[in-house]
Amino acid sequence: MTFTPDLLSRCISCGFCLPACPTYELTKDERSSPRGRIALMRALETGTLPMNDPGVAEESSFCLGCRACEVVCPAGVEYGQLLEEWRDATWRGRRRPVVVRALLRAVDRTWKVRLLGLFRRHARRRTGGSASLMLGCFERFLYPKVSRSAVALDPRLDVDPGQGCCGALHAHNGELAEGRALARKLGERLPGTIVTTSGGCAAHLADVLGRDRVVELSAWLSGPASAAGAALPGPAGPILVDGRPARIGLQDSCHLRNGLGVWREPRAILAALGEYVEVPGAASCCGAAGTYALVRPEDSAKVVAPKVDALRRLDLDILVTVNPGCTRQLQTAVRKAGLRTRVVHLAELAASARTDGSGR
Ligand code: SF4
Ligand code: SF4
Image (cartoon, rainbow, N blue to C red; front, side, top):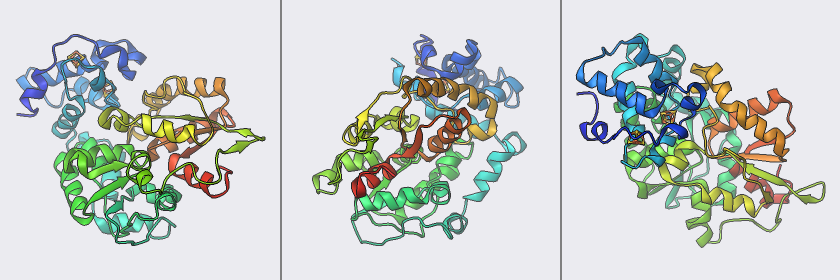
């Protein structure tokens, strides 16, 4: 048995999810919709289609895993879990994209993850606090300032530099058991509450360790940290650009919004930092989607294109992200389009506003 039976049988084929699905929006092809993909999973489960069917492989890879279909589903289909089980069954050996295999191997041991951040200036401070900051494996390498900013915002956060990967990458890319094992290992290493700066990691960790153990940074700053007086907007007040409050937008993290229901919190923080502008389509996937932008760059570019159009129309000063993959995707897209909008993680923007009001 490949799929959890109850999950697969829940779908009533109503089609409410189709308009929410970015890949269906691109193709208008039923097979590239959540309902169509669930039909393929059922065919695999009954043996009507073999595990190595090329069409099935194509759809399991074309799906962004954004879980936009979950939040509109009246039957409570947990599509994210079904997708993890699907890839776990079919992305075996050479059927797993080469770039995915390389990334998984890069972070499958704690020492390798530590190596990624060895020469980067990410946060390392031990405080003995009751909450730990999770250092994302690629975030500590690509965006080390994010963890330094998080600690500047709440100095009580404990940062264990010896922590490993949370396993989200593995769970989303066909190594479900390994992904869960890594999350449990991290949960043992970081006792108490775990605060994360990555929506994708937050949702995976919460799934394995329980919702009460994991808090994403914007929710932490709006909730527990705020109650303890460690939060925003800080003494410097709103960020100014040319003497006026900066026009700031947000790109949601799919897993944070659709998996954990966190979307109000980052908006409330940004509204205190400048003039908040809602970006049309902020809730839909930017095309980063974990490894998607690397595995399917052309489709990823198609998914992000309407966002670039919206950003061009809005002419924002700053676009904020709450997930490192989204930061990278949107920085690249904005640069290629020649837009002046700066793309930055929420932690960095909030910490810099607190320090000197520059937003830099
Ligand atoms: S996944 Fe949910 S919304 Fe989509 S067809 Fe099935 S029951 Fe309907
Ligand atoms: S996870 Fe996203 S891309 Fe995949 S079927 Fe659901 S809505 Fe479509």
